Image (cartoon, rainbow, N blue to C red; front, side, top):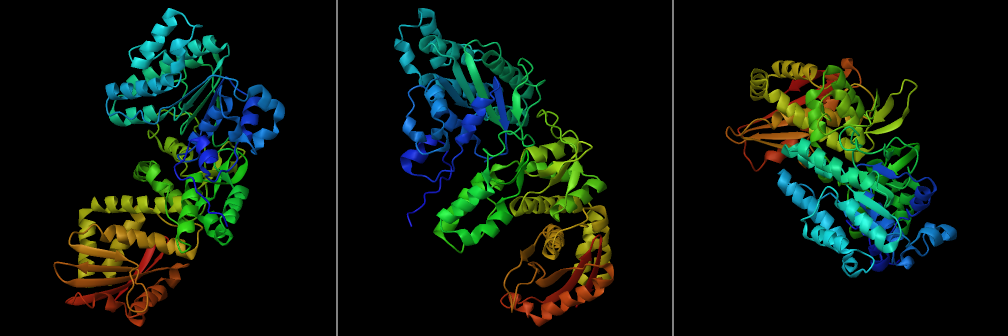
Length: 556
């Protein structure tokens, strides 16, 4: 089998043809775009869903002087009449704003200029054009030096290109909302909104040189924020049926990738970990970044295990904010989601960065927009049935909620002291009271999910509490004796060891027996051997069973 080159981090369309990277054919989007174009086309998708590669594909297809062989054998090449009419027929301005991340407004403005200068430099031949006036040449020079009118720069460049070629211009803007996010984080949001509003207003409204434009981003920012100077953009979000299959990988495409790589046996685990999104009415959409990273890992090592590839490129602080703002009802809903259930919520499609975390309703919508939640359909009352898409995102929820639980119990100093004292004394009754109190005040785990899911959730709660104490070495699922104890703790200062086995009970009346089974397992599997080289003064054993907001503790 020919070695497959997985395109990790490759977003230049030409590289797939020229360097032989594996490519999932998304060129059918070009036909759909041309058959129903808007003047301003906005596509919002979560991070790492292939937006930049789509924009690069559009650039190579439309721009004058393109290498048409890049599309040989692809779906769009079968549309002979369309290709004859549109391929290589337009001047294209393509910029990305993802690097506009300055900590200050002046720094961000400079970075925006750099994006414009890079676009202008791609047309350096215009300096010798005899179709332009001296005034046009002066404007170009100022733009290339970053000394002209930044707000009007795209409009000026499009006017000059249109004059030179005698053809209207296509404008492509990738990550259009990135400057707004960074401005919000760094305290100059209002000034950036004003700049971006004018930047797009000049280029995309009443621009006689514009054929059409395409913008991509994560959020559909409220038109009152930056699109107030435009006619309504033709927006395509995660709930819209049009263009639903072009961003992300479909189930059929993932099956084909695995087959071509000789990885058919990994379909089930790939689906569990990275499938689960629904865009419009198209189900079983995978995050491309995850699939590519996972396949590359398997091609190197068939014993690789799935990892959370998406977490490092996503805004995990949103989940933490969500958990901190949650009331008791919302906490139960979060628990239901983690267990594999669904919740019904209205989605606010247009947000601003200023109000995105201003209410729980906004955060529900934000979690959906950014890919932490997906939808299973719209209800008659206008709400959407929301759920966590897959194992990867579920693991993020569990991790962040464990952190939230840890922070919450740290605020309850007296309760936490009682918890630690009960552990030190081996007092099962007091320890049980402390845990029941904290369970009642925090997230409950009440609906859906497998036995393992629920046991893992309570396991996480215990880790969150135990890791709050200084001088304690806390470990989870380490090999010991004839198995893996759930939690081992070593009090470095006092030389006391603790072994905790966590169980989940389906019914409250089963709590005592399940807790005793946990205690018996510690002895039966000889978990004490974990501390054989630490020579503790004492080893305490705890079997703890959980059911909803109740627990039972037995100690030895």
